[in-house]
Length: 249
Image 1 (cartoon, rainbow, N blue to C red):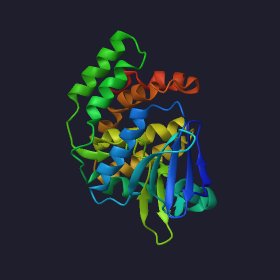
Image 2: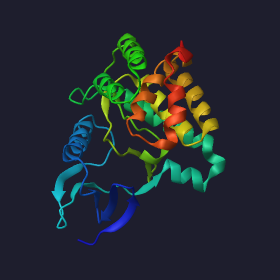
Image 3: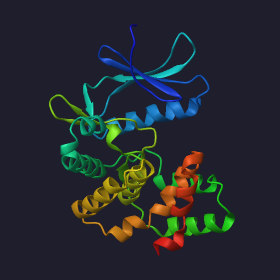
């Protein structure tokens, strides 16, 4: 097996081996999370959405676990934008179109978005009063059953050589409310310091989906609390402001 490294994060590395892709996790990575990601992706496959097909979860010779899936040739929307900044608006439109096509589907066997948010609010480290307000907010939001990615951003959409859009990285996938998924994408742009793109994204998403901006805003404290579980010191201050429920009343 001649592996060629194509992406690296702190706790996972992605390699290519011919027509296959190996997503290799650090030795101390939670085993249940690895199998859950593979299961998520397999369940999303059943919707017919264009994503890499999972073949197996494999233990490598060094003991690490890897999800083995199809390799999809192409460039991410993030890479394309960096190479063609003049086309930023075009790529943002493509991102939203792909997201809306995903939201039009459902994968009933996936975990419920609402349950995931409930757990993460409890683990956020916020004080009891704020957690209570967030739970009340979450309980009041409409219950939908749409396919949601949970980490939808330009790095997770691959445009193939024949101009097809392939969505990758399904570790956070759930069924739930599309506006919560959009609020999450907006927050990711903001955390990356892309304030202008974040606002352009939100405006265009709401227009294309015929969704009130105020409605998506109501999800922002919830998705911010969910992000706090990651415990990134550099995000603590900004997320602390986003979880202020009263700000979005």
